[in-house]
Image (tube, rainbow, N blue to C red):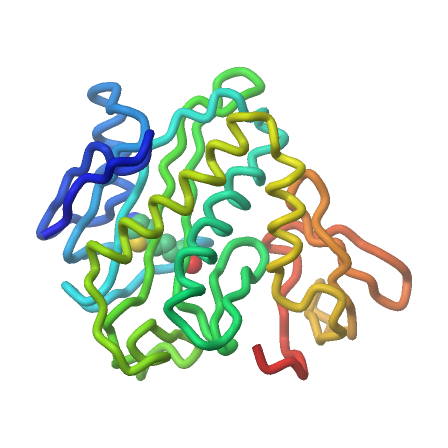
Length: 257
Ligand code: BTN
């Protein structure tokens, strides 16, 4: 069902599975046994134990969505700058999905893709370090494509829910891999600053007041940017504070994305 791409790196080799626990775990298993070609894609029609961020489960209806992982060797990225990879991945997916939908596709920090205020894609990157650099990365991506039943997930949506159309999963995959490769090659060409600027351009709620929660209290704040470690720079009553991923959550905003 899925085909390889003509890209320079991403998707030139593709391992397709009907059923796996998690494509990220399958990719890590492959890495433990061999040295897969950079850009190898492991894709599954059905994941039994899809992994989400922060130990959550990633649930996706079998055969209706994209659930895949990409193996990369970003040795040129310093461990301290690993958020650059997250930015490149999120940007590639955002750009790939934008033409399908009528509303603006945003990146919600750190790397969810939101359309009309709902999540259509989640990203789970698992990096291994060697010394002070990345050695290999498993970039796990779940994109909600043709699924329409999100009863248990009120904040989730899909391309089909948004546009009332059915999509060819292989075409969506190819578009995503093509766009993502563009940003990955920018990082490889030492253009992390351009990638960072593009990420900010598409960041959900940048410079828009919203309600956040941190340390058990709720406050009004405004996102002013991201620091080089990928922390969210949030301006509150006491000035700008940098928050790591588990340290702050968006509660609400007046913006209809
Ligand atoms: C999130 O919680 O937003 C991240 C979700 C990541 C899901 C994808 S689906 C393919 C890959 N394999 C996994 O087990 N997880 C990622």
